[in-house]
Amino acid sequence: MPQTSPQTLDELLDRAAAMAGLSLGEIATQLSVEVPADLKRHKGWGGQLLELWLGATAGSRPEPDFPHLGVELKSLPIDEQGKPLESTYICVCPLTGLKGLRWQDSVVFHKLSRVLWIPVEGSRAIPVAERRVGMPLLWTPDDHEMAVLRRDWEELMEQVALGQVEQITAHQGEYLQLRPKAANRRVLTEAIGPEGDKIQTLPRGFYLRSRFTARLLAQHYL
DNA sequence: TGTTGATCATGC
DNA sequence: GCATGATCAACA
Image 1 (cartoon, rainbow, N blue to C red):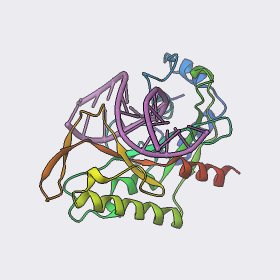
Image 2 (cartoon, chains in turn blue, orange, red):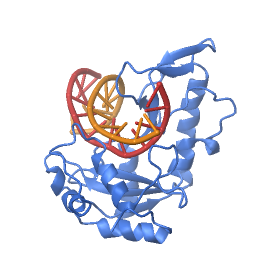
Image 3 (spheres, chains in turn purple, red, green):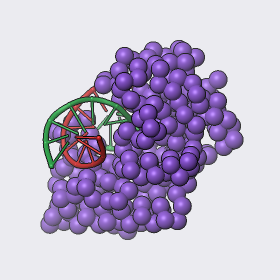
Image 4 (cartoon, rainbow, N blue to C red):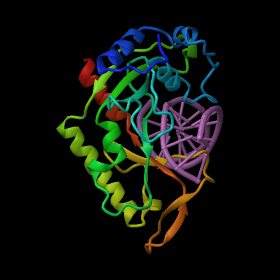
């Protein structure tokens, strides 16, 4: 089924729809991929399985998974009630070279402009191979969502630009939050300091709160 | 029990 | 180290 990249949006959506109802084990078998016993040491396994099936190409580049279609793919782990179990990682947060950076030029804006959400059962009570894939949802933020995302982004980025990145907490932001994004707490990257100087700090990433993705799923599926 | 801060794997 | 894919697990 997979490997080649979908040429059109319809082709992508068809492939995604064809996955709905299948278990991760069934998909893995068709792709000749081994299923890990748990995800403790394979945290991105599910997402990468979906990428492989759907023919995503972007790899680790900071661009949408399907560049020619302008579509970002996100797997969304859900519980037995269909509610997201986790926040959703979007992209790293730039910490330097921020002069003149506008919302509409940001990676967050571009990645969230069109997202193909694929719910996947994520409860740890369900063996990984038995977790089922749900109906895909192609989503574009409506005006309200976009306005809130923009406000969150602008508030966070203003603090970053002002050298206050280390004062930012994951409590901030209504839909978007800024949290550590690194292999571990010893990782350092360059950022702007309080005096406009250069400092070394933990890399941060933008995440979508699960209460936001929960709202999104409820709106479109209920 | 929900969230925040920390962590794991991989490719380049 | 940075960017991708995320989930883990301690704590409020």
